[in-house]
Length: 139
Image (cartoon, rainbow, N blue to C red; front, side, top):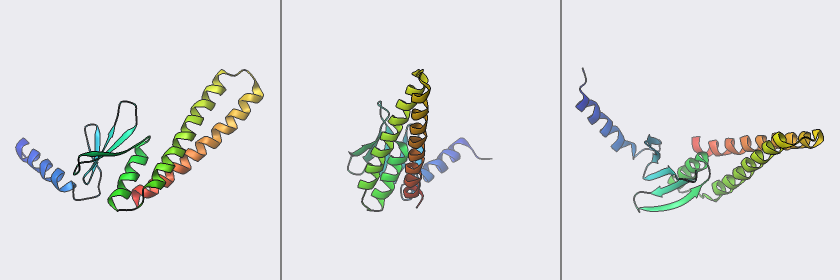
């Protein structure tokens, strides 16, 4: 039978060695990948910190973007495209919120139809950008 102390020792060993891997480690309200930490702030954005240098690197709007940014940062690849995708994703997300609100508050049938089409386009673009970000995360 494993005692609580042995179990805790095993968890400590795994957490110490997880720093050497590119595997995200989730604990409490943060995601740790190597020597980088991703934390959600009060506004809902995601801050990326470098633990080794004790500084904030950047802020993204979505978790997908933060993880993809960190993975590229670890592999020393350019990260500007992730920030661009994050801005595009935010634009389509905000458009979707606007169109949903317009649809629910409008009484004009033609106006609703146009907004539904635009909402569908924004949702499709959002999914397309998320898939691009996932390709950076999982490759």
